[in-house]
Each structure stands twice: as structure tokens, then as C-alpha cells.
Length: 113
Length: 114
Image 1 (cartoon, rainbow over the protein chains, first blue to last red):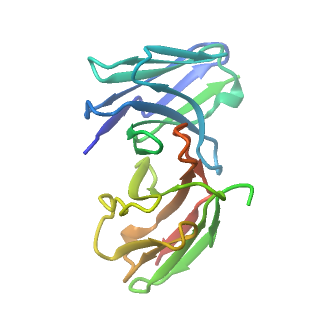
Image 2: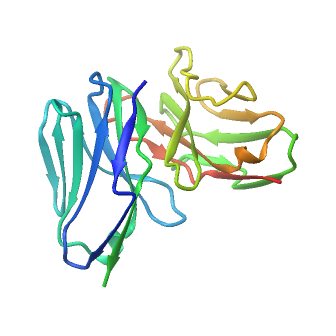
């Protein structure tokens, strides 16, 4: 089955700096790579996703890159703000109408004001 | 309902007892997932129901765990003879089946086994 590794497990940055979280996956059949944000005591919520036919996707201050050859993908957050502080999970999955997702262990991001 | 609903939100039980956790997915969503979240362990896949297909049970950690989905809607996760290592937050999620891939999570059921 799929195995997703995520690094780092914790990340502390100063407000305004950039943050990068990296993930690798094992199953070359995976074709869908979402990122979820989980604030303290809240449920995980999708923030951005990318499919295997695309190398990069941006949405305001967040971007995701995918390297299918190397089987790794990354989340980039620019101009970090204190409200970006949360646990971020990457995931990899395959499917069509629905996807079976395997999640990484998460990265606790702390943005210091 | 407006979102995925789970009950109970908190459950404390004694080792050896059975527990049932319930999930009401978003109406019309064809897929339903159960994940387990333990401290430092991320989101561990347990089981996946997709429409009328046989469920993918490959993540269930032992035969003490079972789940069913009745009428393509409500799901129940049952843990028999609970052990202390079963203590975790059990998250349910549903997705629409429209190809977007987005999982909508419930608030979770926190299980504590004493």
C-alpha cells in the first residue's frame, strides 16, 4: 500500500517568513495530492490540492509543487501570519470519483509574531 | 445536515468493553471514511466505503474493529473488547463522489480506554 513520509514534524518561523513542508510517497499509481490544515481542537480542512498532470498550483499565499519522477511534493506558504499556525497534513491517493487517501504524520507549524 | 456529524464527541470506557461510534455523512455523499488520530501519529486510515462497492477494510488494525454503513448513509464503527491502545480520536469523513477529492471531516469522537 501507499506510504507517505512528511518532514519536518515541527516548524517554527517568524511572521512574514516563508514555510516549506515536504512529503514523499511510495505508490506510483497515486494521482491526487491534497494538503489539509488542522487548527487546535478543530477538524482537518482542505487548503489546496494538486493532481498528477500538474507540476505546480498556487492559491494566494500557498502553493504546492509536485515531482512525479521523484515522488515528492511540497507545500509552500509565503508571508506567514500567526493564523497560519496549525498542523498541516499532506496526503496521497488514487481514484477517480473518490480517492483513498494515505496521510503523512503532520507538521506542527508555529508562526511567531 | 450541513456537515459531517459524529457521536459521541467523547467516550470514556473501561478496558474490555465494547464501544460504538456513529457517523452521519453529508447528505448525498457517496464515500465515507474512518480515520484514527493519535498524538504524533497523523491520520491513520481505517476503512473506506464507496457507494455500493465492498468496503476497503485494509486499515483496520485487528479483528476487534468493524464498521458498517447502512442504506448508503449512516456508518457505525464498533470496537470490541477495547484496549488502552485504542484510545484516540476517531474521525469520520465523507466525499461527494463528483471527482473533487475533498474530504469533509467530522469533529471526531474522542475515545479514552481506562
